[in-house]
Amino acid sequence: DTEVTQTPKHLVMGMTNKKSLKCEQHMGHRAMYWYKQKAKKPPELMFVYSYEKLSINESVPSRFSPECPNSSLLNLHLHALQPEDSALYLCASSQEEGTDGYTFGSGTRLTVV
Amino acid sequence: GESVGLHLPTLSVQEGDNSIINCAYSNSASDYFIWYKQESGKGPQFIIDIRSNMDKRQGQRVTVLLNKTVKHLSLQIAATQPGDSAVYFCAENIGHTGKLIFGQGTTLQVKP
Image (cartoon, rainbow over all chains, first blue to last red; front, side, top):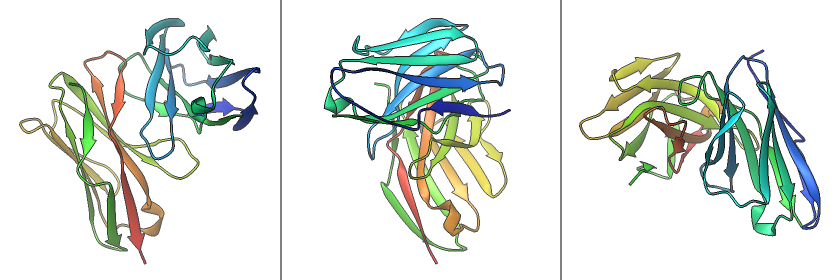
């Protein structure tokens, strides 16, 4: 299995809702990443997990809460989002933090209403 | 500062021609570079990578060139096909930090 799987593919949520994005990989990668991508812009790094521990938080607002329950799973919990948080959220993984093999999932298209 | 940029936002080529997409980076500590292809509604797809101890790497129909002296990266696509139409991003990894930084992207349009 050489894929990063993200669910759901699309999500519409209200500003008072709580939702979660899920990411899964079975390549034995020990680093996992969350990126945010606005339309016609490059992906921007949000969080890095290495060996299930948070390694990098790129000053992301606390309404985004990451979680890595095990080496294959990465979640992003969402609460009290704003319309400007609407974007494509991408998950990626690599062998180790900062090494080769960065593989991206297809993303979750999030719309906040 | 840390930045990765591309020289042209859109590149239009004729089917069958070769394409060259350029990228400039500014961080001398970057030691690993990746080119990604992103089609509409999809995640970035790995094309080819190169480490800073190399200046050229070839794949199937693609070649990446790295010039560390002028901090320049390029992606060459041979015999461009309509299926190559997409946005292409270069990305740099800064010294094993886990930070993979993307450039602004170049849209490649292939005319039949």
